[in-house]
Image (tube, rainbow, N blue to C red; front, side, top):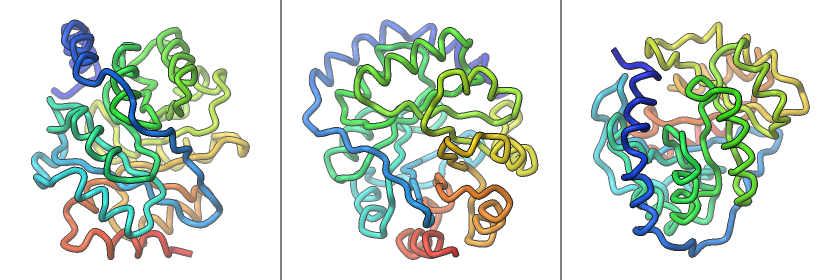
Length: 251
């Protein structure tokens, strides 16, 4: 069974490995790029070689894929750094950050400040923090540590019940994952209700399950969300630039 508990146990066992990675990325060689979203459709395009739900998706050169996204008008690039479930790495983050002049989101199961240090040095501009993976105290500490580095902490939730502790942090952005990370099922109704429950002064991002313009349009109309993280659909597309542009031009 794929579960958050399993993920956390794995990370707890690997803290020494995480600390050792800091030697591989000793310093940052890139300015910080802020995420700027407007009232039009904003796509955060993801480099994702594999996932627990889809298995192997496509083995691509991360920098080349990210460059395609940049040319097609992506507002940011998300990169999987987890190797166990997603066949990613901090090397992928580094190479993408070196190739594009867009904000780069490091998607990893973040449990330790050292992981944030590595992502910062590798060139990431945003750090994913999964609310269901962390206690309230852990989330607060990692959120604060991320902001102290000048990076954007992007908190991910799935349900309304997760919002209470998240909202106390007064984040600028909250990302709602349509996928239930414990069952791997896509739960659109739960995600839509959660998106609608987020205060208007917080920018919402919708992630997972965005496979076509029609799905994006439906979620936008029901929730007012205009920023979407799209991964699997772009990775599977024969022409990812065309699909990204089709998604971006939904009215």
